[in-house]
Amino acid sequence: MTAPFRLGQGIDIHRFTAGDHVMLCGVRIPHDQGVLAHSDGDVALHAVCDALLGALALGDIGQHFPDTDPTWRGADSRDLLRHVHTLLQARTYRVAQIDLCILAERPRIAAHVTQMRQNLAADLAMAISDVSVKATTCEGLGAIGRREGLMAQAVCLLVQE
Ligand code: MG
Image (cartoon, rainbow, N blue to C red; front, top):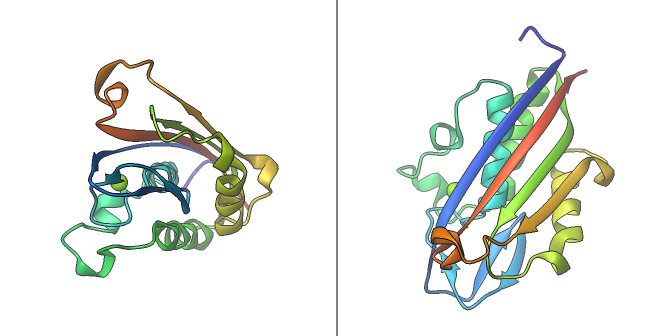
């Protein structure tokens, strides 16, 4: 690790299936569909995990938590996030900043953003003012626009302690 600052970016997408809620940043949001996934299908946390792993050049979430491993079946993605946090702490980095964007036509995210930021801040030992969570629709365009699934994109900045 040669730089005192490290950038990462992560993307995740999951397909909707039958169900009654989605998990986003550990918040259970009622919805008329669920998410097809090995874990709890929390695209937001998966994008953040991938951003953090990317910042450290440690591969991706699929390598660390393979969907062939029964350990992670139905996993709480906050447990995955906290595990990733231990990896960066072990390398003497901390998360200075996160900017997360959720792409979904539905459900609406705005009412849950504060709780999402609080969950991320708690799991990564950050101030809530350093955690941005925002959302956009896709204006009806493409697979997300057709409500076939939802997606998240995250960027992060790590600082060496
Ligand atoms: Mg995922």
